[in-house]
Image (cartoon, rainbow, N blue to C red):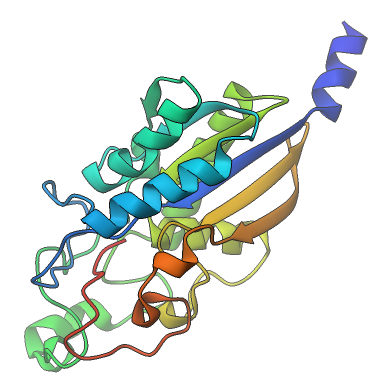
Length: 232
């Protein structure tokens, strides 16, 4: 029994947390948790690129947010490893009161008085799912994947905000932040390495960065009329 416990404590498991690819969203809607938003053709290329990137890895578990864009991103990864795709509702996009609306550069959404009540507390935040609640559910999803793939690797496909929030928590950064500074580009992979049940390192890679339009890359300045990657 003690040898089994010691092995469990020394197992190295890697959980890759991937953001989905580009979504077809010509109207620039903040789609959040809305159904019916699928990958664009470019987004499918991104998904295939990451599947190729991970094809040689020891992946034994692939799981996705229930939203279509995440499922479509995860499918080629699962297929490349001969695995069934699992779904975990804890990987879903963060809830947002502006869901279904346009909320980008130049559309005047921040100037509308009816929206001001939702902007009073950026630390919680007041316009959507509390950051702390995102941490709790995302850590639960990470831990479940670690247990499912113990001693191997797992791939989870989720969305920009919850990925960035759980990474910030693990790396001991404050949860409130400037969204423009998130290091979580489309089809990027944030990798959590566990020794036993403890996260010992976090890595980040962008296997499909050459496919990501310049104005959608991390740190890029918003451009009126171009930033259509609402919701993540």
